[in-house]
Image (cartoon, rainbow, N blue to C red; front, side, top):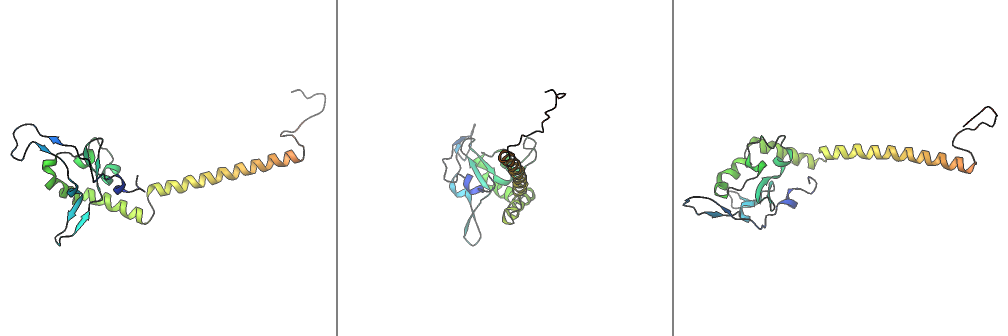
Length: 168
């Protein structure tokens, strides 16, 4: 998931599910997420992609990619972008609050620098796995060399005794 990146999982084109709010609401009782929320408008008018934001079609909720992946205990977490956010009426302050939170910035910058320098935990584990595979291949190659040598020389795998006192 990390190597594919958040943009692969964003689902920024939808389809976005409607959420119905119970009770009287001056803003309306139905809301849904729009594609515009996936872009941040800068003061100079430029729009940049919020690459951290992903929408789950199956759960019909919005998540923060890095915070969701790297949060330690998701059950005790207070951020709705880790457990899933679908209160579309409150997107305006909540998205920017999460985007500017120290927790999010630390997780996102760590992920970006790790991917850029190719030094993520997954990369390290992959290197260790490759070393283990190489070691086992070398052992297997030596065993095959031994078997071929014994077969060419017509020798048995074990020593043998041909005296009368030896019993199998």
